Length: 623
Image 1 (tube, rainbow, N blue to C red):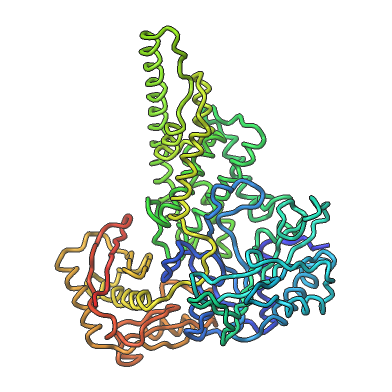
Image 2: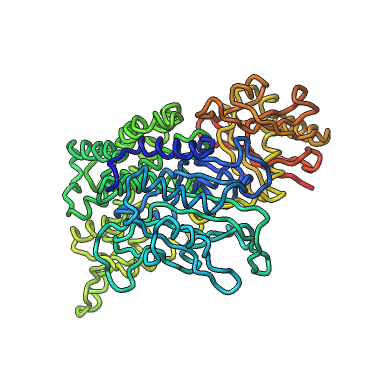
């Protein structure tokens, strides 16, 4: 029987176990990817390690690594509220960068699950890649599992859609994986029930990915010259399973959050929407808890730069906050709740993620502003609803006057209902409730048709949770290097108060958010451009050193994002004639060009406000 365990205990057990196996504990990265246009948020533990997994550079901590990574995945955002889906979660991971491979990875997974977490070997079921034309079955993994005592009947060979990772794009590193499932003891739902079935008998707990192939442009899978291991274990799901709880919302990480929701529900609101059936009550409590936790972590991230908006990551954040506000209204919770929820979440997690406490004011300020904005929008939506009903009633009266046999329309169209959702944030059930009070129904099928079309567009905007390896093309590498030059040039021209608050890079342009209280003048913009182009023309060497955070700061490096571990080695990139004669020196994971002369001509395309006290620059490199 698995032991009872808290999230703090699980994190510590995991890190110390892999430390005992020669892994260095490293700090988890920001939730906001700096140099990856393929995703809006960090979606997995391996995401920040892309340059090292690709073999483009050596990791300063070595070839065996372990950490706890904050992750956000929003591909299933509409499913949140059930027992399984979360938008924010913590991922435990260990990696081999061309070091150990399947034997060690699988053996250590088995050892940790059975000897350190207390799962019985008889509970363990595993899946492996079954093979297909052109790619052999992963019999090596099968053999290792059998050597550990897992019998054939608990080893399931599954196709590529179940047991294969990557590539992230059309080509690149990829390989089979082996997934570990715990048998809950429930009866099988049918003869085809197996790990991966959604009936609840088998719960996935861990995944070991083996990057051993390269997919070519011709669609062939060729053996890679280097082998990597990437593993992932979700904190919330694991402690839920180990404590025998029905859902993650009963775990210790959610307990104070759910308690705060119930405390706020008890306050008198006069809203009139607090009477809900059990299913609706449960879902709304979970949505508020999940979305507020995710929004708090995004706003409180060490890198910052994401605020509620209408595009990309900003849109996702706005959608999360507004969904939480809608469900809080259904629960009868008074306005201003977002700040109280955030305070609880920050206090719960600040000992693990101190950046939340450091950015407390930013978190609460942005949440309150967005909640207030959306509250006004919801009130406007009620006026729009009343107009829709009045319009239908006028139409009925007009037609009845001309045709006594006319049957009055008593249904709000799907298009009207969806507009109330899309423009004013009214969920279908709220519109149905209002319609019922007015003696109307809603065209649900028409609404769902509109909603489906919206979802397809929304998923494209939100980004896929399945992406893993960033492109790190020549274009993004060059723009990333130019961002460092821009950052330093801003400090020289405007003052040392200009610190990076966010960065986003695509293959076409860079975007940098930085602290500055006023709009830049044309003269200042030109001065920054000229200074950056001077460094490009000087063709400065770009060198990389490895040092601790204290050493980096002593050497004059800009280090905005702290390390948790005082002895952790970090990459420091210098652009200058030497490590003491330089223009720019920053702590960064890379990658960068080897010398600035290859960058081309730097041009600022736009300078604008990002949020209060923060400006945004968009710039390009012209060849």
